[in-house]
Length: 353
Ligand code: MG
Image 1 (cartoon, protein in one colour):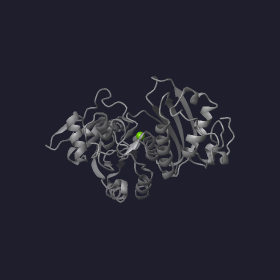
Image 2 (image 1 turned 180 degrees about the horizontal axis):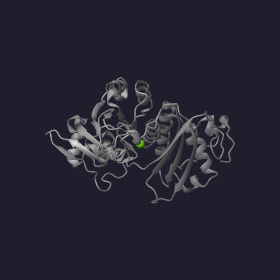
Image 3 (image 1 turned 180 degrees about the vertical axis):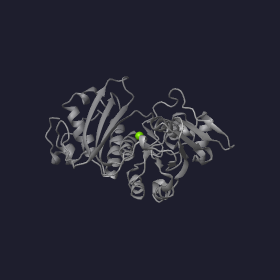
Image 4 (image 1 turned 30 degrees about the vertical axis):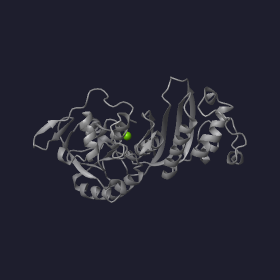
């Protein structure tokens, strides 16, 4: 970026976006003129930070000794707005949660926007507001970003990429390979709310008032959990593919059998009703504010209490247990039988996040 940062000009813009240009145009991606004004007048007031204000090719951050966690995610959810959130809030929470699952405390975010020509600027304003609010609520700055415009018909309104870095305190080592036979498996709340909320508006199911996305920042919940149980083995946010896909991934990496208790699977009534209507299994619906927790059996009670003591973990339950054996997920059914939980072939729910 070649434009000097001038806070006074930003505080009282003297050259507003021209009247009538209420949509994104290709000139907004040209790198000068309208592009600079889009940044100065629309994005900067919402996403600005001291680091972003340096207007350099990249952000330069101080680092302490120790380890950094680094993650990125691209968001293509359709529709852009859904009950309980929008693509901006989802992007910030998704990235903060991936850092939290590494045991990291977030330091900075990036934001890449791909805009389709014709996108109403009012829509971009709402999403930038949402990105900014979610980041400010977490106390994490956007340190760097980028905006590109693609021709009409070559995008679908707006895509967002967010990356994040965080510092991992000494002593924390959370990863699938640390899962052990005998570990208890906990989940911080009910399953499938995000996936069901997006589907309910997409399919016009009429559940909009009842099903709200669970998109939340789990940083605080994870800090409380790790204070109570610093030796936890693994955390995972069951996003795309839901708890079912997350458990399959962890079983494969750990080379262990994951046992799931069907009667313990927490599903809210409206989500269960939507799933029945659409022929979906809530175990494979995306969550955006839940954590799966793997801890030694001896620490399970303490971990569950720590989760339940946090506002975002009140619905925490014990979901199952890890066993020695081959890498697979086995369901103990309500009828007392055991059956394999297969991974669905293909992607049944595109553009959920
Ligand atoms: Mg994740």
